[in-house]
Length: 147
Image (cartoon, rainbow, N blue to C red):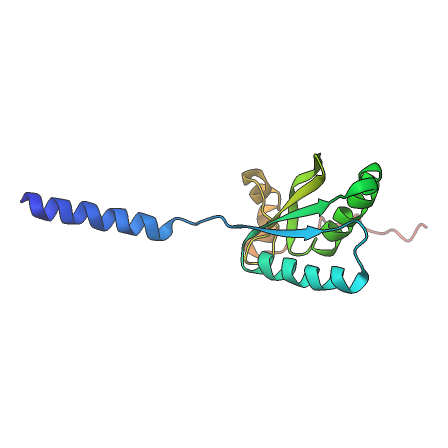
């Protein structure tokens, strides 16, 4: 085998592996504790679009001044966002306070609409239901008319 051919094949393998690699993109959406309803819905449309594209979303609540004394307002907004996108995403990192900001990261569910699962979830269903077969019922005892 000649060396030029070997180098060419190695380069082709490297290109192929780069095509299969996925880049994780983290989009950020910033909220304020006193956000208005219309602003909230507009930002939520963006969050849903980002999750639909397969990107992670980092939600940031920015506190200013005396708002720092009420972190429960930020928690309330983040919980509301998590509930609103429960069909599209799961919470990857719970809300945490970082100085004047509170952050939470959402991870999109898989493309087929199911939530990402671990390996042990695959074996949870009985074998009969996976094959599409029906499970036969146990024969009942004969009824002698005594009730």
